[in-house]
Amino acid sequence: MYHTYSHYQLGLLMSKKRKSHLDYHANDTIVCPYCDFKHEDVYDFMSNHGEDRFEIECYECEKSFHVQQRVEYTFTTYGDCKVHKLWRYGGKHKGRWSYTCQTCAQEFYDHDLHDGKYPKLKEHEYEIIEDDSDTAWMDGI
Image (tube, rainbow, N blue to C red; front, top):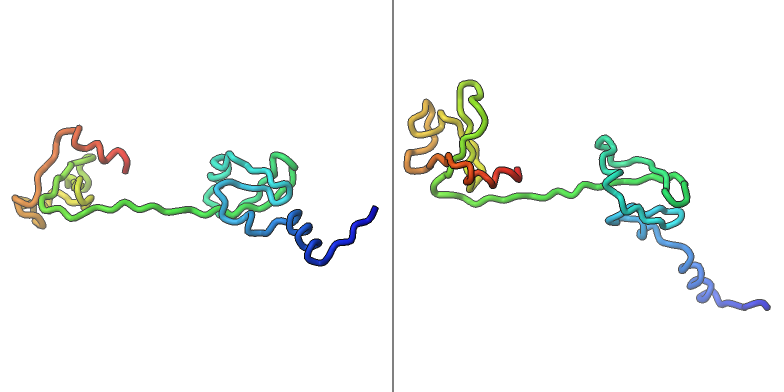
């Protein structure tokens, strides 16, 4: 038995079988363009030596295809502070201590303090934080 289809019906049948290139664009996972297999373990492919394009073989159909990865950037923001809460970290670098403000993340050296050689801060504009519990915010940096 033969079926007669209109151009509209043929178009609908074809569109159900053929996917758009957009189905493979900007996904959260790698989708094989040949068999639609979703490679859920994308982290295995993320360390391709910094390359943004690379070739892989599908785990399901074993065909090779190209992948383009894009990196998303995130940002951390800090507000201004009236009194810098300075945390001294590391050792001396070129004879100077390094400090970071835990409020605004601005960096200073010991010569920037009020009694330093090139003071940027007045005595009432900062305090030194020495308690290790106050530096837990640095763990995420």
